[in-house]
Length: 358
Ligand code: F6P
Image 1 (tube, rainbow, N blue to C red):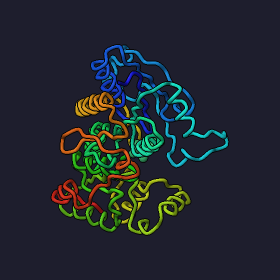
Image 2 (cartoon, protein in one colour; image 1 turned 45 degrees about the vertical axis):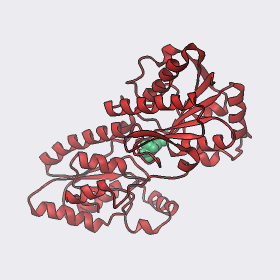
Image 3 (tube, protein in one colour; image 1 turned 90 degrees about the horizontal axis):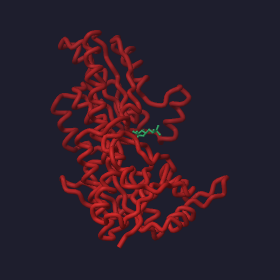
Image 4 (cartoon, helix red, strand yellow; image 1 turned 90 degrees about the vertical axis):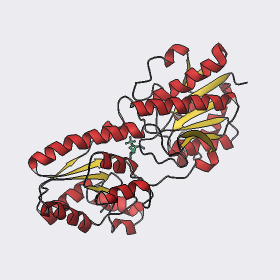
């Protein structure tokens, strides 16, 4: 029987982390009463490496369902550096194992995205009892239909598009809205459809600026004086598609760009003569309270994870498949990315609506 568990949140934050922590803790207290001890590992894996944690009590989990961010703090500790001994001479994997055992943990819940799942899998392979839960506004974790944080971000991004829609209409402008998603375009595709965008550009489909211009001109020809582009921050064009990511980013840096968004806006103005503006909501998409959908999802995930711990089922990643909460072996999930399938349902919906994908 488990007696002492740890929880950590790692990687970029998102709405729903606290709601998940609450789901795990409240379900554990229901199962074990006061016989369970909960440790909050602070700032993600960095807290595990540096022995930075605090003992939590039942009261700590009250009032956090609606709270944004994470009460445990989070940090990006890149997976690729986990086995690298850097200047500080710290063997990170050895330290994590040492501290896990020093805390006398029976299990560690790791809440995070793709990077977190990789490190969670590494720790599991090193013999620690790990349960991972899928967090990310990017929705790109393999093996789960949805990750928590995603739908709240879709709601926020949609509101951004809605608000920009009205000003775009008044001024008869083209508005280019950059949405988060470096490798995958789930957030841009979903919020683009929800916000009625006319053109959606995602990393899975390198765009041709001529197709963008064509779509804008077609709208002008039928008297639509304004247009909305939803562009993923990781979108790139057909020329850039021929380059390795490193070269693409180096070239962009030379031109003072990190994303393609401003370039797209300039090209549109030049090639169509239409007045164009850029909007970048950035981290607003990761802030604030989780939506009702995410509160329910996180409670489903958290309580399921508690049950897994009760059954001593470790080395697993919690997931949602066809509306049922399941778990996969961590080793199946780690190192994979769930891209938007270009022959998938939502891309078909966009095409049927006449939305240009560039
Ligand atoms: O992984 C979530 C995410 O918000 C991505 O969409 C985005 O590219 C990245 O994090 C931004 O990271 P940071 O908060 O470290 O700037």
